[in-house]
Image (cartoon, rainbow, N blue to C red; front, side, top):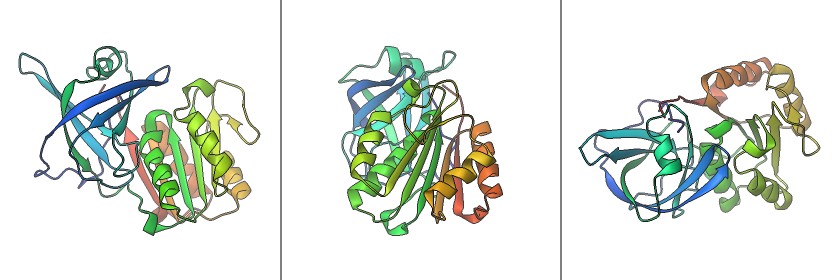
Length: 254
């Protein structure tokens, strides 16, 4: 699991728990599964998250936050869960959960790390690993809404095989001229022209922005702490105004 660190205020105390039914679980990458849920939740906004609560037969309960990867209002709701070997919850979603299982959810929650089609662009999204989840919701919402603004999505993972939503994004880019998708790998060769093999740093980000040719009006960065810090520093070095950059960090609560 990759737990979201919500940006306060993002979890209203009055948000009720709802019963959710697992529709299916699909392998997304060697370490990430997509969990599709049906639950009576409001549509929400792209970038928000759900809190999931699991309760054992003896009454012990554990809860985690997961960003919604599906577009607002789309059912079933898609969450992605990265497996942590020492995790308490993520192994359940990889090894135990089955279609028809019930769990509890609350949300969608979060009012800072969100994008609406009316917000416009140009839009820059940068994600590391499972941090692509809320960005994927934005990409899907951007495409479904027909928002006519340029979108640059930069996703980093160790290898090509570990890039979540890779095939969907490649296919979407082929039919959406305003979308530019750049895959960044740190332990693998580049698979397409324009992809990068390195860690994202100031120089790489400046080159990406120069090649894109747009000044981002909204920037969303999501991933592990070190990744978010490196990207944010690089964006500031590239003269992207700090007030345009919103971040969300993933921890490792499992």
